Amino acid sequence: MNLWNLFFFSFLTENIVLTRFLGICPFIGTTKSTKNAWSMGIAVTLVIMCSSILTYFLYYGVLVPTDTTYLKTIVFILVIACLVQSMELIIKKYFPKVEKSLGIYLPLITTNCAVLGVVLLNISNHFTFLEAMIFSIGSSMGFVFVSILFASIREYLDTKNVPEWMKGTPIAFVIASIMTLIFSTLGGAL
Image (cartoon, rainbow, N blue to C red; front, side, top):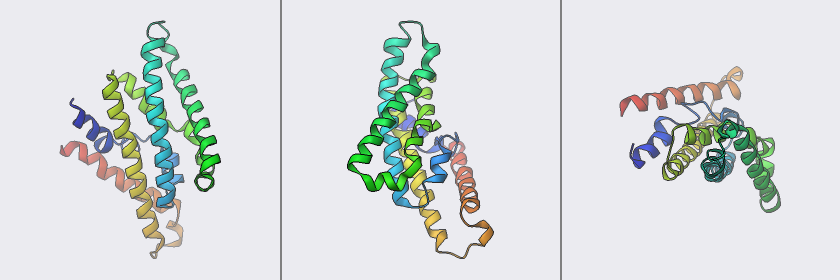
């Protein structure tokens, strides 16, 4: 697979949120506004990129040579947790408004299955370092793209006459389902 196809595949046709169903909690929880979607998207992108780099070198530089690849999941979770904790401290100190707007969802990046999913997919697909970075960038940008698109739709619907019983989470799940159907058909069309 060439690098452009790998990027397009990870960004759109196999989007980690809409076709792999990873990262649904922050996708639903932080997309009530495009501002929050941007903030969460940037935070998730930074964690995915940094953790992809670190886990790649830990896996091939430490776990494979020591024949301890069975520890990859726990090692990857520890790397992600350390990165998120560091990022949370930096955001809290330098960007308190962002920290307040993201609330509980910022520390939950630690348990965001999208982050862990991307680093595990990098290894299980036997990507080279460059391929892993392209896949990580595409997946991250895909997460940001669908989050902002979803938030924009939710903001638009907040100004419309939606039945009371459909407001909030119910309409959000309907929109997410429609987006999933659209994105899942893109893979077959290419």
